[in-house]
Image: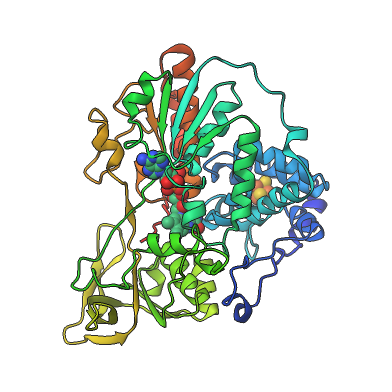
Length: 498
Ligand SMILES: Cc1cc2nc3c(=O)[nH]c(=O)nc-3n(C[C@H](O)[C@H](O)[C@H](O)COP(=O)(O)OP(=O)(O)OC[C@H]3O[C@@H](n4cnc5c(N)ncnc54)[C@H](O)[C@@H]3O)c2cc1C
Ligand code: SF4
């Protein structure tokens, strides 16, 4: 690209994505941003200066060839752009919406590092291409020929982003893939946790249906550890097993009153609203949680999702968070959306106890004000209670949203599977092999609660190792040079969901 063209491109401002009005959207479950139009997407794509060393790719945990897919959008080849994404990413319409791009590909964008310039809107372009393909094209028409069957069979436990990525990568290599999912719908947190207004379920269903069209079999309502154990799967003809069961066990505050009626873990609250469609009552039989005032405890993405869901279920919604707003682990965009919609933020505040009425139902919560002390292990300043600052907020629902840890069912029923003291699975992070031969793992079950893209990144590594294992009987570690590169790319800024 010559100097003049580069200059011309650098003058184009980052394109805005239109959004639903906050006053309207807090009463509905429709998606908040509307996405780019064809013209806006092409204009945004023209901002890419086609760097010789595209650092954006380094920031992507699944190595999407970002400049190439952006170039296809610029040329108006939207379906081809989507297929370029599908080469590395089984769920581009999902990651285009929920990835923290501002700390991954976009923070690395060369354009964004220049004075007064903003990075190329890589996430929004990814979302645009994947949405365009879903509405207008068929991934089948551009997909490569079906591979020769290899005669090998792999069981995948859990249909979340990690498991679905492994399924997508291995089916392309000709292996028979069977996914076992505990819930009645595949998608993991994408369907039971992240709300409709952030990630419409139709999108997850479409991306899962692409995998099914490629030949992936999915068994629903199937709990491994109850219906069959891992050893039983291995003895019934599977050549390898991948565990992608996530971290679905909620943590609580351990304060008095947490067993009262009206206290829901964020997981339960969101599962009722999302997966069980409480917001569509009476079309769906799930009774909505009808509250007047909901207190959500926490400052991560999960807390923002719960607090915004409470608004949509008709309640007044308040967040109680023990540190300052600056230290909230949620994405800035999510905090901003919650504030715009009218969620009240009670920062530097910590719950002490929950009060109940004569029927054992929540009627109030006692909190104490906090101030920031010295930094703790996480590098953030430790919150310290201010003596005598206790106060009470009347409410009828409390939603602790303090993070999740892995459910111990799989490790309890597979004795030779080693776990860490946090209950996550011990794994070789270069190959995703567990302590048990032929068994691999990845995603939140290994890292603890993290991000969609990090789960998918781990899934990709596991798929490469599984392929080698079932075709050669061994797994080789990446060479030093490759490992150095990988380590550099590893997302150190885990998206904490506290
Ligand atoms: C409310 C919420 C909002 C979030 N928002 C974001 C966000 O905006 N951006 C982001 O990047 N990340 C976000 N995250 C985190 C992200 O969703 C997870 O890191 C990611 O989904 C982990 O993927 P996974 O495949 O490891 O596990 P999961 O998505 O948890 O999937 C695991 C699957 O395994 C199934 N399973 C569990 N046990 C068994 C069993 N014994 N047998 C069979 N199946 C089993 C579960 O039912 C589930 O479907 C959010 C998380 C939550 C809870
Ligand atoms: S770093 Fe930014 S400008 Fe350079 S190729 Fe990647 S997206 Fe384009």
